[in-house]
Amino acid sequence: MIDKRNLLVEMDAIEKWYGPTKILDKVDFKVSRGEVVVLIGPSGSGKTTLLRCINHLETVQGGRILVNGKPIGYRITNDKLVEDSERNVALQRRDVGMVFQRFNLFANMTVLRNITIAPKLLRGLTQAEAEAEARTLLARVNLADKENSYPHELSGGQQQRIAIARALAMKPALLLFDEPTSALDPEMVGEVLAVMKDLATSGMTMVVVTHEMGFARQVADRVVVMASGHIIEEGTPEEVFENPQHPKTQALLNSVLH
Image (tube, rainbow, N blue to C red; front, side, top):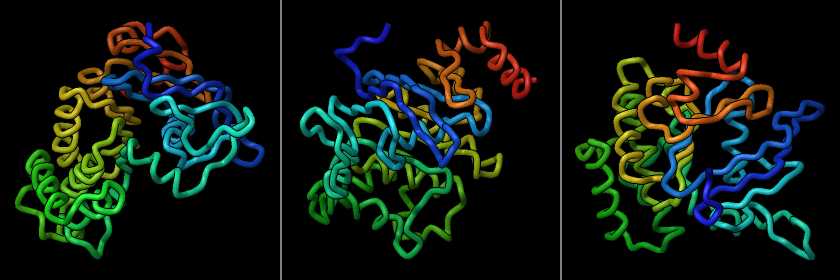
């Protein structure tokens, strides 16, 4: 049972359309503070879209999204949701870190500058403060010796760990991961998952879209299964992986685990 007093993300009856195609169909999704939720499902099921709606990278056509108890991307005027300004949305996103599939590092900036630029602009840190925090985070992701490197000089796994450090530099209440290992060579997957496991055990609230079922088994507090724009099943890793109830969940797990 989810404790409403401890909710960090509340999504109620979310609807998302791309033209005539309905991607999310009245989806309810909630995340408590300190919880690690893993979203799984076949391609095209709506997982990434749901994730991107949480921090307003995608707009919705129906429903309500609250992060930290406040609408994200919208303000309430005369009891109606009105699209908020880009400035206010940017301020709201300080609480929501996002790690993308393709790293999204600034190619013309060193690792250190990639990590320090947002905290200086949005958290008001001095150069010295931002650099001190960045070096602590680089040590945490085992890349303390790469602060003067440029992204093209790093492996994919190293770039993704830098992207995680950059997200952490904003001290977010929530971290979103959109298939963070799917663009990596197999030998690099483990180093990224190790950092994510460390974050999970430290109490970071995380929502992860992934095909890494081993990670979901080991780290998730709750596994949520999506298909055709709906949440079709959810539960602990043991419940979902050992005793899946929905035929589509059973088919998905048979295809990826056997």
